[in-house]
Image 1 (tube, rainbow over the protein chains, first blue to last red):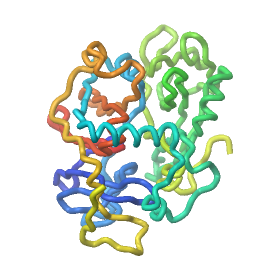
Image 2 (cartoon, one colour):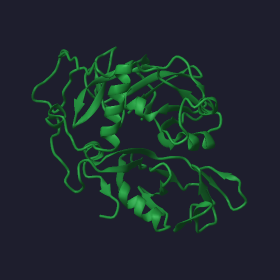
Image 3 (cartoon, rainbow over the protein chains, first blue to last red):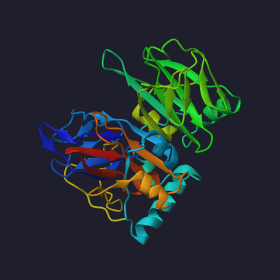
Image 4 (cartoon, helix red, strand yellow):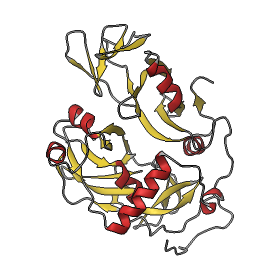
Length: 245
Length: 87
């Protein structure tokens, strides 16, 4: 996630500071408080209870990111050879193999939500309602991929907000946008064609952006979302919905 | 992996508060246009990326997903405003 690293007027500097429910948590060097890296909430320490403002962090392929954000800048890290090796195996475990749970990770899990396989990949989406309580739903990647291959788009509603959840077959990356613009608020169905995902209002979603029937870009904000393993999302949002169940 | 036990750690907690020094945070001090990076093949077109969408007229910032899998945390400033990215 993206966050504004300031609390009570103090700028915070984070590092990977331990494990919580099988996930790496952050600590800040200034107060040594422990933070949830997904929700931005301080779990323990002097800043317990503080929640950092979140900024959406979105998944794209490099070319799609460039298509949607032509002025974007890249923060590229010059990793050492050792760091590249660690990054390679960590990423491979995350994306491909991913069945091995280090014992020191597993012992931090309090419960395991067995509605889905622990290592399954999916898109977790959450939005805050008017009462400030977050509603969260998990969309299994294989469900989104199946819908996409059958030519169907997915329009859903979460906490009173209409959203479209999609799967990019080229990059294998799912994502979600909020259908809040007047042109798309009444959309109920979507289908995939050669141009992109076409809503029944006539709007088209392609290369990460939404366009009206005349080809003009539409405002399509992103809800908070995370392309992640089921166990991590379920542990962060206990009792979350699972799409299709 | 080097670890040390900080103050306040509790064995009863589900939280393991041992610093994971294997993962060094990414201190972002300079960036380059994504268009240039694609042209110079610093990154592949299909390479998975993470995009920070800060809004309010500030330019989006892109990170290589596999690098963030290593770092877990990146921090810097965008137009004078601090940000942190966690993954």
